[in-house]
Length: 219
Image 1 (spheres, rainbow, N blue to C red):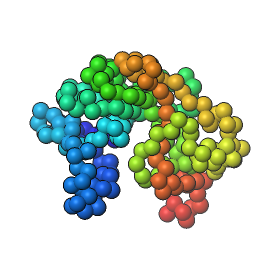
Image 2 (image 1 turned 180 degrees about the horizontal axis):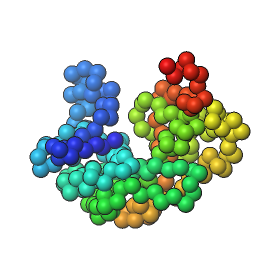
Image 3 (image 1 turned 90 degrees about the horizontal axis):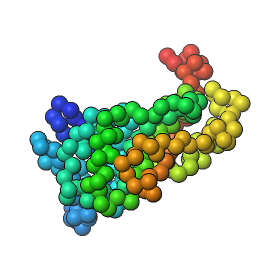
């Protein structure tokens, strides 16, 4: 996930580095060429190690300032490396008519910047399920963000069977119906835009909702 320090006008990421870059000096030396530092600003040199053929640029929901800073700082040498990009949008399946556009001006800039990405292969609207799922006692895992064309089976099965807050469960259609918000990326080639689910699956933790827990569990 790309992040932005507005006070210092610096782009950075907390994403875990590939194991080859952490193992030892020899392994780092062998693969370092494939992960050049990219996405600097006028005040800071590039600091994000990025492999365009393997990595997806992820932008969190409600990240207008980040998207504006990213697009205004984007250089042709970096933009040509981008092959996959994902703009995250929070979604609540119970609100089917909800307007999902927390990026505002930032998305406009990103659509303009699409012209600078000649090697782009896919542009995705990644639907974050956490707000809705947290209400039903399902929490994100603690690992890296993963993108899915279908809702992860673990989550799908849990919701369909029923959890602490939804003992009756949901129908498969209610759980798996993915919103179509591809209009957010109207500046990209339509054939390259698709909708996906966004989820963190590593070390997945399932909790009951706070009001369902015993008093001793909350103390």
